[in-house]
Image 1 (cartoon, rainbow, N blue to C red):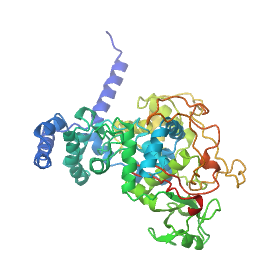
Image 2 (tube, rainbow, N blue to C red):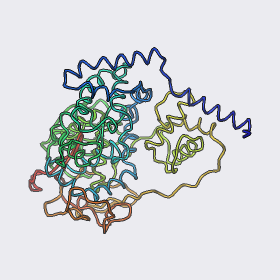
Image 3 (cartoon, helix red, strand yellow):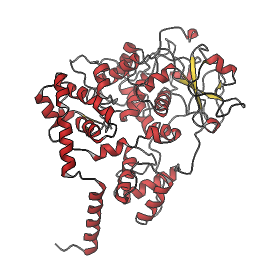
Image 4 (cartoon, rainbow, N blue to C red):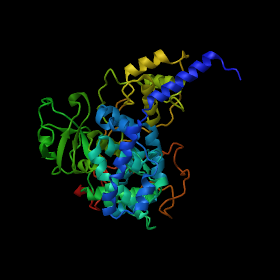
Length: 511
């Protein structure tokens, strides 16, 4: 077959780009890696791991350069907080979360009842960690941890996880073929690292295995059990969005200063909805990442419980806010500040079109920067020899414009999901549009206020189906009970590595 020279040249260039994008370890480096892997056998043996388990777990593993690349870039630490939080609360994630709230309602209720952690927090962690199980990670856990331990990148962390990971295989909770996770060895639906799994994972469905990889009851139950151990306080929220006094400056309050809510209120800090704090004696810290330029929060004990899952403030804030939105509350009142490197919706869609044209992205153009878009940017950065962080900046967009084939401007696609406007509480006036809705801390549901029951709780996990009385996107057609609740505490909930709270069965006045 005759192949045009121009096409052959393009194919060869693309192939060379792919080869150069992935570093190939030298023979000497490969030998050092294998020697390092074998050096873990004595510690594994002392922990009760058999040679057969060790051999099966380490057979054929190699140094994974993508793991090292990912370890050097963690978006919850390097992205602006507002951008990280907004990405975590995407319309698609909200829509899917509302569907999961219906589909797994009985299971979430059971988890909440057992562990006292708000089910919306458990659901939010599931959403942030693996997009409700759709992105649990496809890296071999042992290979990832060995790569980190033997490369010097986050080696101390990895060394502390390897023996625990091998013990999981020894115990038989899963097998090497299913023992997959993230680049850091975080596993399953809610991304437990091996030591956390060993200490806190539970067999919620009672089948004799703690299977967080393929058994949703075990994954969500384990998350709630971990949050409970992390001193989650039932009946309390994670925090409140607040307004700052005119006297506030960046140096007004030292980060980490803990005061009662009453003391903060006396200093001029108030809730954005103008309502009093329901429990003025609760201790809180001020979190004001952008000062007057962005939203500020008084965060409580449960915020620190979420930090046990991930030490980044942006992560805990994303989990807490996603839980609020899933419970029916609106966005933050104060918007996040913008910067020259933050792309508009139109620019994000243009970036996706260019990535698709260059073969770095598959799927639809929707302007949502999810895992696919981030990996597409990484792939483009690799081919260009740029630092690989996946961050879609103005600079990257300009380079894509220069490299991508000329294309006609695409029409903006219709929204993939709609989010209902927040409902006002009975004693509050509905704000005039387009004023943002009040983002008050979630309010507890009185005992008599039942959640929408679209599925009969005949089993812990109902069969997936479209719930009657709900819109196609999964949102209730009637106001969520929390949206119309006149009081302001948290109800019972079930959580897992960073949760929110549940009800302690106290009457509303006690909150």
